[in-house]
Image (cartoon, rainbow, N blue to C red; front, side, top):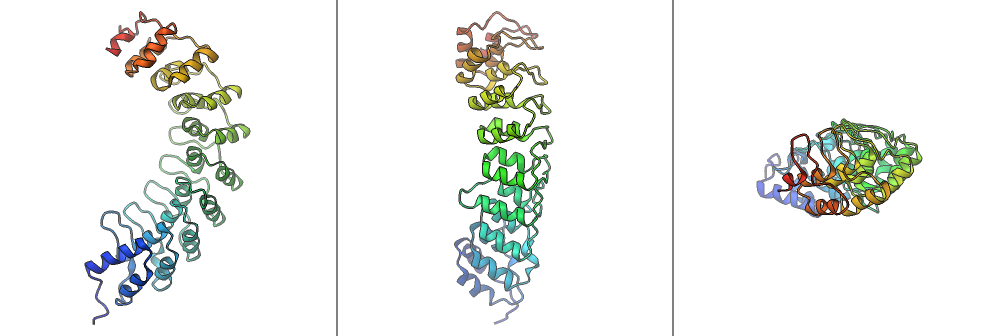
Length: 327
């Protein structure tokens, strides 16, 4: 047998399947037949995932150890078609043991995948109750850049604000997380948490004196975002902490206009009963909340607003009544 030949297509398929199943015996049997063939040359055509990517993602520790220790370890940071390394995969799926062994063998802790995401950032996106905190802690202990920004300006602060894990959020803060960081479109972690209904994160941010009336590049405040997300509890706490209920965004949409576009009946009722905003408020385009509901085709909101005093006779700057849009 010529020990320098590469595995056949059938053997490569078996290797990839074995990596998925955690079958080290199969991998050893095939790779020991080809002394000058490196496992990094075996990958899925569609994704570019190597056997190490698969093993790292699924937590097959024995396979990870075998691939790195028995072969040249320089491929530990091999990248798939999304530029993800095996450490990215392990971190994203909270595979603590996979991360640990990869780091011990010298994996680049701050490697960047496409769009500039580090393993730590991916670890903040898919949370696992058992291992996520441990995984994030491990990465932080090994000098992960806690405030790295991806191409859209998102940091771990925004990612955890979206996912809502209070314990990980506080852990990141211990390692220097900048909670007031802004994305490329000016959104803070408070905007993100308010939109996605993450009350615990909102409370932590407010305790840290984050600006409750900070505007993003569209002019939306966290209160606007909370209304758009139909998160009444967050609306209440933001108002109690000084959120401006009269704030308007750069399109001159106030809370009532936005709620009519995207909110629920519960939100509309809260605006009427508690905020007591004008149901016939007109913005610079002559639009009332009723116009907004009609333009979005929201018949239930439209009828509810009419029942609560909205005028169907109001004409906007385009010469249209709300009913014209609805029809």
